[in-house]
Image (cartoon, rainbow, N blue to C red; front, side, top):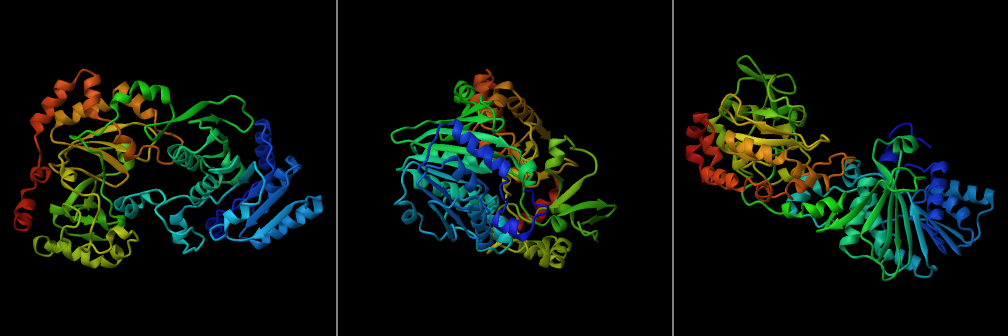
Length: 518
C-alpha cells in the first residue's frame, strides 16, 4: 500500500503499512535461513501484513503477540485474522510501545523468538516539530556529548531506539529479529550490538525498493539478526535484493567502526589517528539565511527578503555553500555571510559602536533571529552564531561538501583579500598559505587517502561524508606513507602557530576591534 501523501498520521507515527507482497518476501527470507520460532512478536503490528504472513509461515509456533498504538489498525487486523481462521494462540494488545512492560510480556514465551516488524520511519526531531508525545523517555542513549547534542547530532530515528530495545530483550535469549528499516539505522544498530559483544550468530541486510513499496525516498532494507548462546559473529552480509542468494559485500567491525571493506582498512590502518596539526572544522551555523546571507547590489547589500541595506563591510565575508564546493563554483556570483562573532560566546554588543549600521540591521531583524529553534542559541549573546573560531579566518582552506556523494576537495583562496567562509554543510582544513593548501589538497587526493575513506563511507547515505570520518585520517601518517613527511614537517615549521584573525587584510576590522580583545 502506497501512501499518496505524507499526512500528519503517517509522519507522526511513521505509519508506512507493509504491503502483503513485501511481507511474504520477508518470511520467505526467514524460511531460507532455516529458522523456526516458537513465539512470534510484532511490537508495532499496524494492520498486520507481516504478522499474518508470519502466522501462516510458522503455524507450529505456540504464541503470536501483536501490539499497536492504533485501535483502528488492530480492529482491521482482528477482522482479517477471524476471516482467515488464524486465531489460535493469537493475542492482540492495544498499547504504546514506549510504556508497555515488555519484560513481563516476554517472560512466559517459549524460545526461540521471532521479533518481526516495520517500526516507525520517523526521527525524534520530526516528532518535536509536530509536538508529538510519541517518543521514548529522553535519554542520551547514543552517548553524545553536550556540544553534539545541542547542534543536532542527538537527532535519531525512532526505529533505532526501538531496535536497540529488541537487542536488549534478546541478550540472554535465542531467536531472530527481522525488521524493515532504513539501511543507515540497521548499520548503526549493528555497530552498537558488536561494540557490546552481543551473542549475534548471523547478520544480514537485504535491500528493498522503498519508493516502490512505501513511496519513500530513502535507502531501506530488511535487517535480520540471529541470536545464539555463546556465539559472536562480527560480519554482516549485504544482499542487493530480497531474493538474492549471494551477497554483494560483507560489512565488518574493527576499531569500534562499521566498515564496508575490512580487508582494505587493515592494509591502511596505519593512517588512522588524530593529527595534532590539522583539525577538520564545519562551516558557520546561523540558522537564518534570510538575514545572515546577503548579496551585493552596487553600494548596498540585499538580504533573502529582497531588502537593501548599507552595511559596514568589516563583518561581511565571501560565502561559499555546499553546492559551490561540490561543483567547483568558487568564482562568479558571490554571496556574503554576516559574521557577528570571532569565537563562540563573544559579546556581540560591541557591534553597536564599531559597526552601527550592521547593529541597526540586526536589531531590525531581531524577531527573525530570535525564532531560531536550536537550543545552541539559548543563553548566548544576541545574534550569536556557532562553529566560528580562529580557523574561520584562515586565508586559505581545503574544503569538501558533506552533502554530495564524492570525495571532491577544493582549494579555496581569499576573495578580494578576504578569507572565505562556509555554511555548516561544508567541512574544511585551515591553511596559512597557498603552498600549504596545495600540499594538503594533494595528500587528500592520493589513492591511499581515497581508499582509506572508502572503507568507512556508505555512499547510499543521505549525508555519507561526515566530519567524524574525515577526522579519522592522520595527514602526517599519510605523508609518511607517501614519502613526503619531511615536506609535511617543513610546512608545519614554516606555518608555526598562526593567528588567522590577525591575517584578515581588512585593517579597519582590527582597528575597530582593538579595544575588545580579551
